[in-house]
Image (cartoon, rainbow, N blue to C red; front, side, top):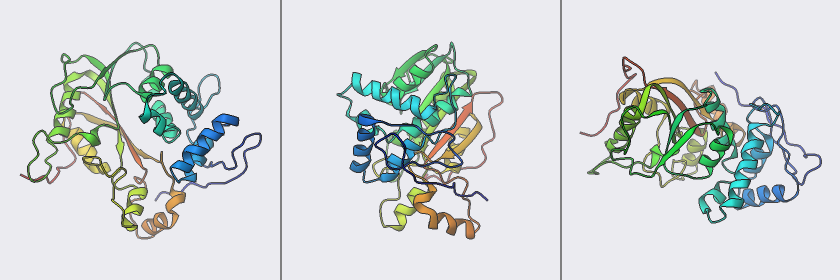
Length: 308
């Protein structure tokens, strides 16, 4: 069974930040000085979450680049540059520094594909995540679409080496909604991804985990059991893998990541699940899934009990 990471709080020398968080997931600290530290602290206070500040300062992503810069620091710098260029982007402003760890993890997963000279489609349009990815992997051709993901996408079959399906699938509603969702929009979207991928191409999908420690804790506090209550549908690890396989894609890698919280926040809940022999290995906030288009199509590992 999994173990909760060990964490330590301490003053960060030479900075305005009073806390750092690091453990088995980090090997170096990200140092914030002066105005950057003030930005981070102000955003964390607005979110009423000191842990956001701790996690960003902690640099929880261990991957580093050729110049020794951590992924977390790279993302922080890129997000700050984007906000300077696009001060009107309110969504990006709200996501900084909240999404630093998530985007750093995204770069870590993309690095496995060695993206160079590829045609890459990003679902959902251009934003701060697009800019961060372009800055890290500039030698690719990027295409974005704001087309309704419940409809056919305006590209030819086999047009792309990679499709980025990041934090959008939870927003996709049904094609026609009746008395209950049948996930027709989600299934159509994933089917379109398969159509657009070249044989051997990959989809990177990220989406909130509907059975994370954070969500369970919210339910116990009589709050909506969602990462974000206004999503159309959030999925469990089993559900999302079944849906991807039903669309004809092979799941090559799957893992949940702690990108917005930490087991430290819900330590008693973590220990309860472990003592009751419950799964504690798929309780991260966000799910990361790498799927591939290959022949023959997979046999789905299960079937969802959807309304008729």
